[in-house]
Amino acid sequence: MASLGRASAIIGAGTMFSRVTGLIRSIVLVAVIGSYSSRAADAFTVAATLPTNVYELLAAGVITGIIVPQIVKAAAHTDGGSRYVSKLLTLGTVVLIAATAVMMALAPVLVWIYAPDWEPEQRALSIAFAYWLLPQLLFYGIFALLGEVLNARKVFGPYSWAPTVNNLISIVGFGAFLAVFGGPFTELSDWDAPKIALLGGTATLGIAMQTVVLLFFWKRTKLHVRPDFRWRGIGLRHIGTLAWWTFLAVVVGQLAGIVQSQVVTRASGEASVTVMVYAWLIFMLPHSIVAMSISTTYFTRLAEDVAAGRLDRVGPNLDESIRAIAVFGFGFTAAIAAASVPITRVFTASAEGAVAMAWVLCAYLLALVPFGVLVVLRRGFFAFQDTRTPFIFSFVQATLAALGAAIAVVAVNLGALPLGFLAAAVAFAQSLSTYVQLPLALRLLRRHTDTRALHATWRALGRFALAAVPAFAAGWGVFLLLGGVDGWTTSDRFLGIAGGALVGGASLLVYAGALALLRAPELSIATGVVRRILGR
Image (cartoon, rainbow, N blue to C red):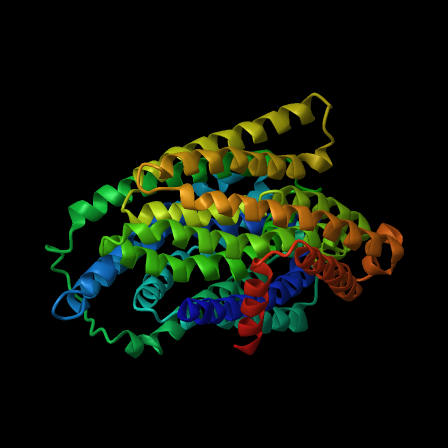
């Protein structure tokens, strides 16, 4: 447990630093291109999501869900798995190069799919950005391949710290843009070829360099790799069977995302797709720091236990990881919700824009805890090399999220929902779908392991939820005492940071106090994790 705690702390510290620098990167980007009500920002956002969405479609589920267990098993080979990893990296690189070339050729079609209602000028700007940003697909894929090999070999730090390099390069590049051209440029007519090239090229250079950074840590894996095109013996049929269901799960998720994008881009000029992306960025900050750092280390141990037949350890492993994630998740939900307006003011030019983004953020926050728990459960299925079952509950979630988005746009057309709340309604529908997905996943997990060890887990989550209520109330009270929406916390971006820290800090202090009053044993675990992260 101690070694897992140290590994989680390394990942958590790296993720925290990379996410904080990522927020700074986003603030500088807002200064360049705007956010709330900026049509140019919406054009950039759609183009910027294409490489990540296509990467998720082609590789993410396969790499994170399937590769780690395979590498863990290959470690038992006489060469420690070097030949297997060589074949794997060669195959992955070839596929990624081909996919990147195809996607760049299809850039106009991809933009049209995500934003079919845009006028030609806005679509043309998005396509121009896409040509500069789609090469990120190749670097995202190689980064994930290298990173998961490092994780499987228990070299956890570099994968979580490397994105900081991307953020720093982007901050410098975007700062250079401001120095040369000024900003923000929110109108479509403001953008010419030099501006597009500097902004898009900087963003892609950052992703490329974060990939290069991982190579400096490769010696720690003790693997000797070289290009190897002899893919026979890699187990392609077995991997293909596993990957097929993962691919289908990502497909349905991306289809739901396309529906959401097509719905929300109708509100371009108000709270639209860019607002949703920044709200999701804030949502992912605590999730990445806590859920991903904890689940990554536990997943490696879980894969080892399943491979060795130690199935009695599966339930306790899931219990430990879910508790560790949830004790932070409820606290962050209360704190960020209470401070939602000051926090979102950082990414908007007015208090009005902050309130509009805060609605979207709070709609997402409703699912912060179940979203983290689902990461653990999904990796539990992957440890058993079951990718078909996650497809089932992912399909249910994606269907409900898409249906919710469709209902939201119908409500707008009927006049029952203001256009400015369309993005918040789509985010709310997605969160609700997660609450259907979670119990279904739990029920299906019984096919593989005894879930009775999780009964105590749900009682612990009840304690956390109870403690979160006064925590939110305290934070919201501080926000109102500071003037609320019309106060100083929403008058400026930098004051928004200070106000968000005060409000969120008050919530977290009350949350910790409430856990202490409830005598929650997880409080000591949480404080230990925080100390280790700060120490790292």
